Structure formats: C-alpha cells, structure tokens
Amino acid sequence: MSHSIVLTVNGSRREIDLDDPRMTLLDLLRERLDLTGTKKGCDRGQCGACTVLVDGRRINACLALAVSLDGAEITTIEGVGREGALDPVQAAFIAHDAFQCGFCTPGQIMSAIGLIREGQAGADPERIREAMSGNLCRCGAYAGITEAILEAQAALAGTDARRSA
Image (cartoon, rainbow, N blue to C red; front, side):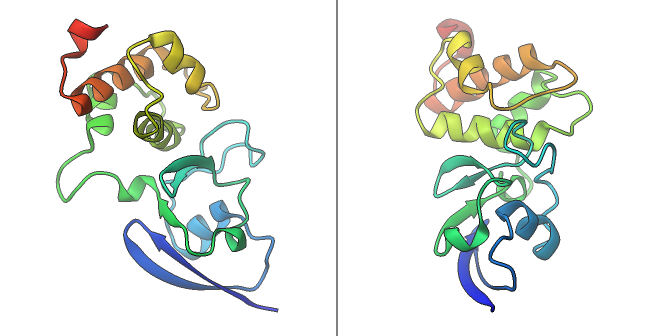
C-alpha cells in the first residue's frame, strides 16, 4: 500500500509516494531526494549527524518516520544560505575551524541554526555545549563549534560576540 505525502523541502513543494510507511525522513532525504548532506551516522538518534529542521525545530531525521511529517517544512544543509552566500552559522564554523573531518558538520550546523532560532543559544558557552550535546564530533572540534555558535548568534542578534562573551 502506497502513502502519498507532501513536504516542503528547502523551499520546494514535493509530492512523494511512499511504498513503505516505515521509511525514515533520513532515508527519504538521502535515497529518494538525493539530499546526501544529511549524514547517516548511528541510525539510532545518538550522534546528531542527521539533524535537520522540521517546521523550524531540530530533529534527528533517522528517528522520524517520513509518513508522519505530511505537510511539514523540512530544511536540510542544502537549503541553508543563499545563492553564493553562506549562512552566518556556516561562515562562523569556517572562521573558527569548527570542523575537522567534516562528517558531523552538516548536523552540527543544522543543530546550531535550530538552537539559535529557538532562542536557546544565549551568550553562555556552557549553555551552548549542553544544548548541542546531542551532536557528537569524533574529531573533538567542540571548542571551535561553541565559539562559532557564539559568534553566529551575536551576528544574527546584531551584537559583537567579543563584547557579550
């Protein structure tokens, strides 16, 4: 039995027929929509490599059934930034060397964007580390990630990160 759903993915309306109602959002994005920036890490919701935004909130795509998201707005790493311009979070990740191997970077960036949009970032590094604890980095780039989020949050708020930190 096929299930039809409609998703808005990175601003584009997509009508999708699902043959298997057990298909996760992660598998739909990677296998059916060819959006491979979202990574499959643990496939158990423990590493955060698959973090995307659903209706503006960050979720682990490996834990969400695609069929349950009918009508949702999905933002993946491919939908971040504008034509030829990086999102402030992406720019801050580069400026602070907030990645090494890069495998976790899309999930880290999506989680950081969600964290900032949810108003959970603030200017406290400990608060950011706690809020980002669901995103693991095997290379240990956590200091750069925290600094990048502080800078991006301040830039988006229109303040100087050096004054508020």
